[in-house]
Length: 268
Image 1 (tube, rainbow, N blue to C red):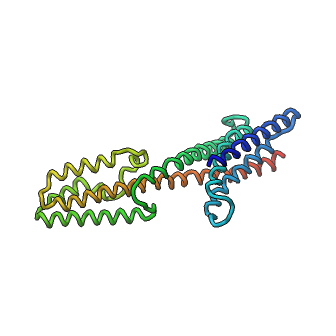
Image 2 (image 1 turned 180 degrees about the horizontal axis):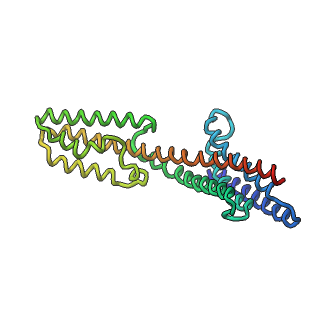
Image 3 (image 1 turned 180 degrees about the vertical axis):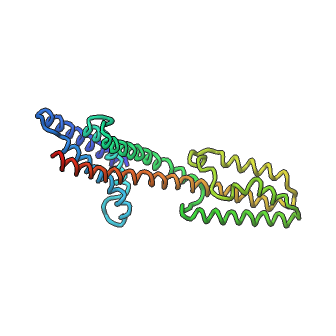
């Protein structure tokens, strides 16, 4: 990864410096460099947009996805000074220009957040036992819930009383209903594990010897569901980020194209 950054960062910095120098020279000659900087900015955004297309064409030999990601990061970070070079301000005055600027900053900041997530979340997922595909997790939660109810039925049949069933409905039904503790799982908090252990200790005190085996199976399912929930929360965070960043980027590119068209029709 460092090898790509070793050449990409200096090249990007040199390109920005050369563009800034050329813009300064044009202004010194009373020429307008906005067309040059604007088209360069739009071309950079279009190239960044190709990254998503590259991911969908993984079978085509166009370089590795990892290399494209590094180029995406370097060029994405370079967009900020390029944008400021073009606008010559952090925040423009016109309403139309402010809309473009707002989209730019939202797409830029969401991109930075996405890069941070791409470095942190996969490593956290690797530390969770098991492998689960996001789209299949809801069905797995249903299977876990049915197994939990079966364990409760076994405990009721073995003991002849409803204690375990009542405890399940009052204290555990909420947990098995759907994925829980999303925020705790994405922040790496120990709260979900502590919750399971605390509930297990509290409920076990109410149970007789005949229910202990069934309850041990239920506790095992609680721990397993915690791991499934952790997969779900972290994978869903990456999915939700993409659902935010991609529409913002597409909207920015479309508005940038429209802006370029209007400028060339009415100004140049």
